Image (cartoon, rainbow, N blue to C red; front, side, top):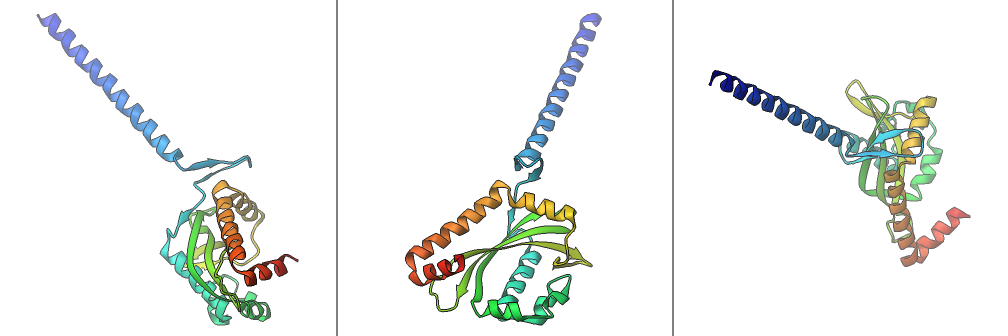
Length: 208
């Protein structure tokens, strides 16, 4: 009886070990699957997390909205406050010319991708734009902007980027999901051009 009892105890211990290993294996598999759930492999020699999140950071959204509204208003002081290199806006000639054509940005959505470090983010903005003398408000894709966090504040890094940052941004730009955003915007542009002769003429002038 004692020997049978020992065998029973050993069997229970063996079953507990097997069950424990099963749970650990299942948990490990689940974790790996979770980590890979949003990974996109490109034929670019790199792997990146799911290309973007939508309006994931309200502070970054606020920065981009402020920046684009300042572009439309030709607001020099606000533009300087949004970037790491304010001297870019010492001469506002180009901004003045642009603001006479694109008068407003509406329904701004920000699509963000992690940058090269925890304090940087790549941002694509998709917005309806108002064009002078044109009824349609087509979508436009703006950016990418390389946003950095400095002293707790988000700013658009408009300085000369390192080769590493430029290469990374180019790779992100070619990922499937970002290209889908470009296609979405182009389809909306084509639709507006079909319905609005004035906008079609505007696009044709830009492309010539």
